[in-house]
Image (cartoon, rainbow, N blue to C red; front, side, top):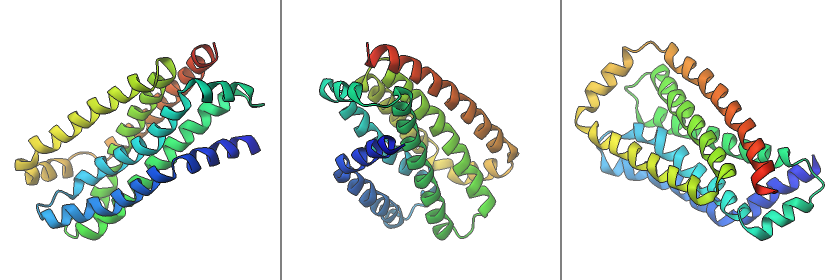
Length: 213
């Protein structure tokens, strides 16, 4: 347990600069949306957690993928499964904190929108990103950091393109989502937990055979 906390502390210390960037981005991005004044606050549900996890967890994966760090990990008196566990915990915590922060900012800025709607939208996006970053980590442990990062760029382009394409029908989009059965967000969350568990077990298997071959 002490070694696990040591690895977590190492990731935080190494990524201090990137954590500062994450903090600044989390503050500046909502301000930019306010200045833009085009009621695009739902974009925060995706772009805040997506960028934050990419900066923190992605950078940790990049550093861990080097030969020197890999050799160092081999010498640690710790079950290698716990190294994967720590990376998943970092991803989940960063994603959860970013999603909660996005919700709170939206709650303040979007006065005319119900709390329930914002909760379910953020839960849907959280579930989708939980699935994605689970796949991201499994690709990282199966191949390498660069292959995983390419999938991030693909998601970023798809996500931003979706928001741009739906911008002109934003009000219609809100109306359509409000008529959806909110149970869909809970179903999506359960599915995301199942998929995340599968990617976690797969990552453990690939980490053992690829990183420590």
